[in-house]
Figure 1 (cartoon, one colour):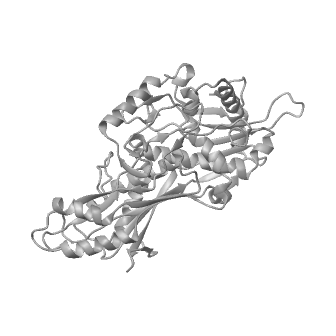
Figure 2 (spheres, one colour):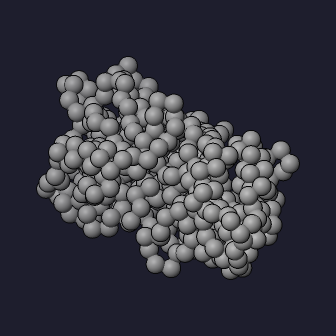
Figure 3 (spheres, helix red, strand yellow):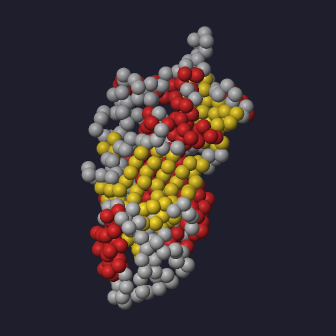
Length: 462
């Protein structure tokens, strides 16, 4: 948005933003995935417009999800520091489900309760043919439950479990991310910026200003914001997660929702009585942050470490045509909020599933890039064509409505100054760059691979 001054009271902050979303899913193709719409926050209509889901809609989806849920059994009820998932054996299970026309069980949909991927192990095909080649993903796991917000999370940690659907999209999109980063950006239109500026110039002063009266006019003037997605299928759950995480971050920053954890005030609360530089608007975005990607000399064992995300910020301004322009500068308070958000991200993952899902997606894209860029499929001698979407036996992923526009919402806060502030932001994932820059040799990961080899035909094991 832009900055303007109001003289009636000490401070008025007007924020126009959009609500975060877990859009309505639509499955047009026959797949072994579940067949019911999922709404958890808002829905997306056929025109790509995001709106709030009603309480009745949310209750209906939660009820249907819980009626079809399968409770974890056996060792799946345990919490473990390292659970292994075989991609080759998982693919065989999927092929069988397709052949039989059956839906996939929950343990497959939720990848045996994996919550992060810390290791990738390669087991080459035996030269005498006694053992097939395989690629194994490993990480912490726990039994899962369906929370009241219809998210599927670890029963103890509250953090979302990984999804088969997202793994398939990551594997199939990996080659596209070599030249184009995965990103979402949700921004006001230049026309909306100009209309809002003209409106505020007319109503910005005078003792009769009323936020409740002004809000409808502000919303109409600003209009919908555009959603721009790159580097991934726009009708995928992964795309929905990027949109949801971006807007949840904006809602927290701009005081559109209360923080679910302590010591994370909104950005507006932080600058309530200090003001902000006129004409400057902060922009935040979430990106990857891994400490290292270690591998053995033979490249048969890989370890991914680090918290996975960090938040960056930059000050933007709006030019005479309503376009936002990056300044290359960072305001002290905006940087402070970005650092706080990064520091508290792990806590947020346990209470806000959009953030946990985002980190899962970052892990999955890093893993998919390691497999692709290091040619691990060829190194192992295994065939992953069904998972990669290259098989004659199709396994389409569910289709989601593509989010294109998000309706604005206003928030008013009084303080000492007279600024109008909004935030723009997004999510950016550049897995090829991360793998190429962070990959380093470390023989210590080799021993973990040897200890983690499969001893039976089960597609997962501890």
